[in-house]
Amino acid sequence: MSIGATAAEKRTVHHLIGGRSVASEDGRTFETRDPHDDALLGTVARGAARDGELAVTAAREAFDAGPWPRMTAAERRTVLHAVADAVDEHRDELALLESHDSGKTLRHARHGEMPRVAQNLRFFADFAALATEEAYPNGPVLGYSLHAPAGVVSAISPWNAPLMLATWKVAPALAFGNTVVLKPAPQTPLTAARFGELALEAGLPEGVLNIVHGYGGDEVAGPLTGDPRVDRITFTGSSATGAAIMAAAAANLTPVSAELGGKSANIVFADADLDIAVPESIRAIFGGSGQVCFAGSRLLVQRSILPEFLERFTAEAEKLVVGDPRQEQTFMGPLIERAHLEKVHGYVELAQREGGTVLTGGGPPADAALSGGHYYRPTVITGLDNDSRTAQEEIFGPVETVIPFDTEEEALRLANTTRYGLAGILFTRDLDRAHRMAARWKAGTVWVNCYFERDLRMPFGGEGISGVGREGGNFSREFFTEPRAVVLRI
Ligand code: NAD
Image (tube, rainbow, N blue to C red):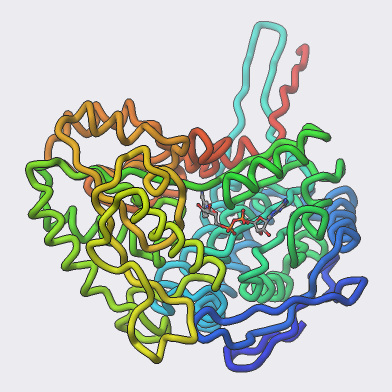
């Protein structure tokens, strides 16, 4: 594999299997393109099931016979810190690659996501090294717990925060002594591939992190979900794919942690500080061009402030700079690919058929310089019922549905009327209300007067079709280890 330091040169991306850079056995490839102008960025090995099997074999051998699971957590910590240092040293290069491959703004990639990649590694390396076990003295019998590494972990990740979400899985899996096969999304393979090179150079033993590229179903991801030699599957992606993966895993009873889609309510009460609620609500739906699992895509506004709120919210949406993600002033880059743009626009057309009114947006920007990319304007829609398809299905784009409510009880009922359960966002000055609502909100995370604040120790995941299980801190430890009871007569 050759991945250079600049984004301008075309790359040839191979799999990383057993520490070696290899093409697919059948030589097949696919292309990765820049969503800004559709420029070819690289040619990527398209793995078949056979390549997935070889990666699982490499991870299995590294687990069964290699040093990694037998090292102390402190020794693994040293290596993972060296990998994090390498990420920091290559931050600009990784951020540029991520921006070209995914369309996210270079500013966010450089200042938001790449620092989080390094933090994922350091946090879980430290967390594992500091973890304690429990002893259960019981008269002549002494018990204690051991958290043994689970074994081979398959990590399957999406395109919307490619390296950040990949390392959210890889870092805890490695820190707790497992070996890994990572499959990044086919739309965004470049940073994971570069990360694999950096990890090897930084001292990660061969075979401990394997990376394969390609598609799901019966292609490369087949063995990652259906091979009995895999001990854990950690997946982030859509709810439909999550269900397919859980079905494949069921044949071997392989535990799955699934972080899936969302349709989160963002509730604004009349007593909210609108100087906070307006910009945070804007960020919650238009950040990342709306391609964020947590996006506050159902905006519920108390009726008494609806006209004022809508005026301010729409005005702010219209001010957002949509454009080249490498420009400093850009807030929203392009959507990931043409098919996704068509899906998003299809929902805006559906909204109009469902009786909605498009207040702003509803199509690509007029700027001719952007016509080669997959750009879409921030879109605000009113007049829809909470049970319309537009308000119930995940659009995963810059489309906000605004729905009024009168009472706290009604707001909570609307928020919870969804099959998803990923996040809730609430703006109010009434903290009693905030606690009351958080306790009854069907959501893995509830943010009050803020959005996207993350603490890696906290449970992360969703209810309903937004996920199965939680990761983060001890929750990751539970998933990536086998807790064992050891009992001695003394
Ligand atoms: P996706 O489900 O299409 O793909 C995700 C990954 O799964 C990709 O690597 C893909 O190649 C792979 N895959 C697809 N079919 C597979 C199969 N049958 N077996 C194994 N692997 C398979 O999702 P996407 O379009 O890449 O990402 C967007 C989705 O991810 C949205 O629904 C979004 O909400 C969700 N997401 C959730 C979180 C979270 O933390 N809950 C975070 C980010 C994104």
